[in-house]
Length: 452
Picture 1 (spheres, one colour):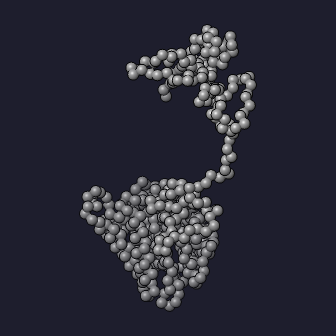
Picture 2 (cartoon, helix red, strand yellow):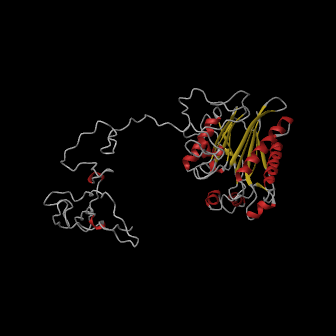
Picture 3 (tube, helix red, strand yellow):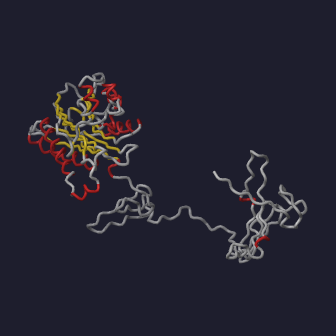
């Protein structure tokens, strides 16, 4: 840190011209306060072109900075109240100590001083640039055929422009996918950007259908974009939508849930592959980028059967309503750690402690080695709940027992609340990744049941 230069000491009193010592703070003859700034001359000195001062420039006396008490003690700083200012006419704004204070002029804009002495009344609230919604009787309806602009989440008054900023306060609006919640009867899903990522690269889709025998079925698809690939958020969104549409179309036709899941993953793969079909000019600017990619995990729940399908490291957990019964993980990761455990080269604790643990070996995308959808079906003998999630959640509840402890006991009756709790569990744990979870009760309740 550089030091500021010190001012030169005064040699004589600006008031009576009495000689002064270097450490004097007041004149010994007239008592003049040497720390105040002397009045500014009516005409400031003119500087010559060569930089030398014109006549009268050396006659200005400046206040002296007080000397420090010792080598380790800083000099005392001037306070605003220690300095005596002047107005435009050369009159002091503040009288020196002990001087009588003149009575204020009767007119608040007295020309004698040029200073307004009264203070105008201040409004209790400053008006906003846009109409205050609290006093607006009725909002102005947009013209027919024109969609109304969204209202700012910060000031609740301004409209949001096409770039995502409030026209009133300038606040940047959150992205639509930063936090999403959806409930469809007895199933629900929540997705959150997390605390470290700049965007949400997860996506989900949920839905309900009626099987040929009239029984209900619930569907959930959760996808996690591969961050090292191009447009991972687009990949996860395209995959989740394609898989969900395929399931909702196949199940009412009587397709077995496990076969329907296989076909849905293939459809999701085609949707992600299509994102890589970019113009040649787009690749010229980023030739080394990977094609869009994501993982996928999905589940179908019927009154007597549940089926799961996946590619990648997103998971499905089974948690019985009776917490005395053991929970279970129903999927196996396509990851380096899972391969080490399957080959017997490491135990699970060692494998997942390795820095390579989360390197995936299977994904959806044009540059995937080959597409190998995994599917499995189960017939539980008791009611329970399926937790379908990305690694943004299971990183903080990896084992089935940990997931069971994090899941609320009333999850079967309140799936949306439970999904929110699980997302909160991940955020409380650090929220290093995007977090997405769907909660599905088994067996599927009859139509009309829901949660709060």
